[in-house]
Image 1 (tube, helix red, strand yellow):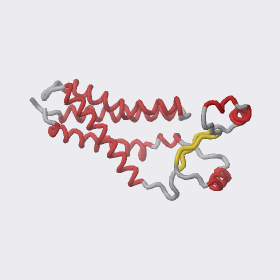
Image 2 (cartoon, rainbow, N blue to C red):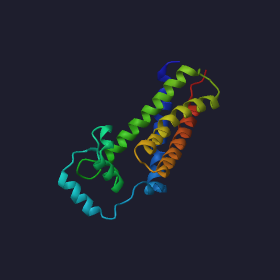
Image 3 (spheres, rainbow, N blue to C red):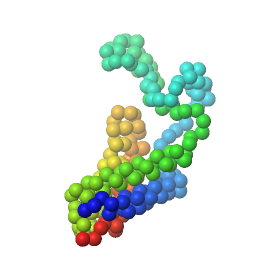
Image 4 (tube, helix red, strand yellow):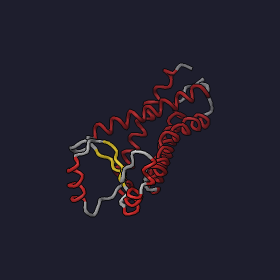
Length: 186
């Protein structure tokens, strides 16, 4: 089957996911619990500003290599706390248009990969449920599973991961359903 016949479900499913994610984040607002404010935010911001960190990801206490984990001074820093991973963004208000455009691009990429896998495993006119199963599974892997490693390695609260995985399951179902409805006939 020519890949060109799959561009419509690729783009439509990306649009459907984009709209669904907008509803989940702006209307339902259950992701408000994903981040918290520090009780002494102003003092922490002032302390960070003194170091003038460039955008990036920082860890404190920082160890250049694992050998330092045996250093009693480093061990004491970990025991005293706080232990934190911090993402520093560029100065200025968040550029929502950029983030939304990147999110839509990612959604197109996920749908493209789902279409690629489906194209090589299914045939035109294939049963709708099988189309939904293949494309939805690929979409679930892309939209949901990566968040689990954030809780394992980056300290992301598991509640955040559960919310993200639920979102991913919704996006996967919508992707699979879109492909099922728009799958090329035999």
